[in-house]
Length: 178
Image 1 (cartoon, rainbow, N blue to C red):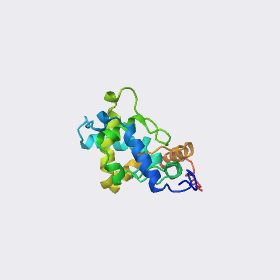
Image 2 (cartoon, helix red, strand yellow; image 1 turned 90 degrees about the vertical axis):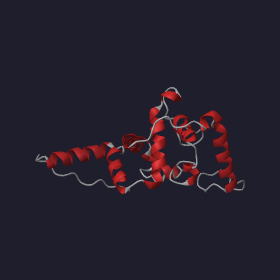
Image 3 (cartoon, rainbow, N blue to C red; image 1 turned 90 degrees about the horizontal axis):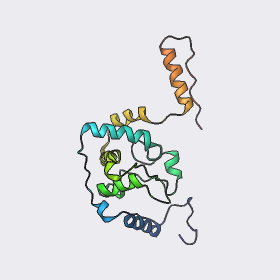
Image 4 (tube, rainbow, N blue to C red; image 1 turned 45 degrees about the horizontal axis):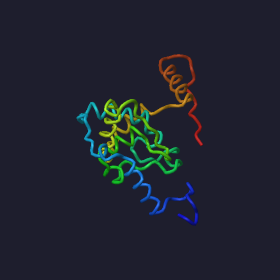
């Protein structure tokens, strides 16, 4: 760590990882670490949170929570794999705090609006994070409908729908991705 500095190109060493975890731990007030999720889990809550995650979080974290996206792999520190023990071992209160307040000096923004006790969306996302290790292929497929689209993707989709509806429009050419 000290011979190469804190380069974002290198994987962090053990000491850097331990320091970052300790800093995160100390940043979350004890009272909030122990806060239970006030929203009962249900299929409807999980569906709502899954859609919210796909629309707001998957750009960095991927629908499956792996962090394997162009942004997630290139921010520093990299977006964590939310399915693994490093995240799953956090309490509900800790997960809520991170979602609601963000983490300074990382790519994680503060998503919470208003007072923590009024932020039901973040508590619902905590339920979804708990589901990530066992998420199904069907759930991942459903999430694709809620992922943000570029203007070009929206135009292609609209042209294709018009074509399927019988309009005399050539189907859009597939987008060229680099």
